[in-house]
Image (cartoon, rainbow, N blue to C red):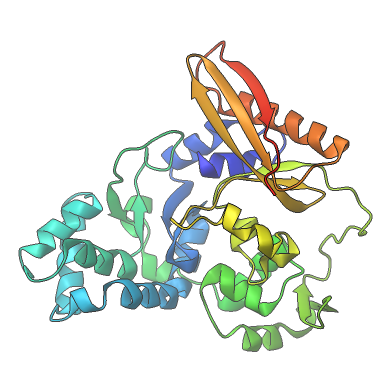
Length: 328
């Protein structure tokens, strides 16, 4: 549901079926990408970018599985993993259990993690599709797309920065690092030279953007928006203070690793939202951090009704919005 809501919040009249069909036709794929976390990206970007992100995946592997993989011949494990996946698509659990027969003193989750962090593996549809909760079958990206991964990986880190700024600029190089999980951005900016514009941020930091990127006047109104859980607006910056007050961070980033759906008022995170469904009815619960101005509240309520209509699966479902009382 999250990527669907993410697109709904950004595109006019976005139909859910468009993303489902793109996944089914292999134009969009779900795999580990930036920060070694799951993303939905175009097939072209997956092939071009995934090799660039190998360093982030290796750090993730060392951080999570280093001790459990002691004594495991990684080259041999990768060869076995490739062979197993060439036989048929498998779940991560199946992959780990199969490798455990060769390395019984290791952990199956770590053995599977070794394969996932070294090979680009697609989560086959319906995984990632609307309201699909089944365990994902994994297959090598090149196999799923009928492409040679080594020949297709032609993008550079320069390309990656330009694409990042097209979505999130103006931003600092530290922001690009937080988004991607990569380092070395200073050298990239130096190479790009005049292909970037530079600005001074409110604290003296250097902000980068594309020369022709739209930069609305600061007085331009920002309508209320409801963002999905784990939305990249919050995850794509090192300094989240540009959109989220640090005092409210614990109410968005929970202790169990959840990044809650958020409500933007005037371009700033001003609350969270959730949907409660029961007996043919759905209620969008909006939880402000503080009292919202009348126009902001009314706009957020209208957005919530639109979201309920977008997410409804049952015909005739009754919809309502409840705005909770702010908690000091």
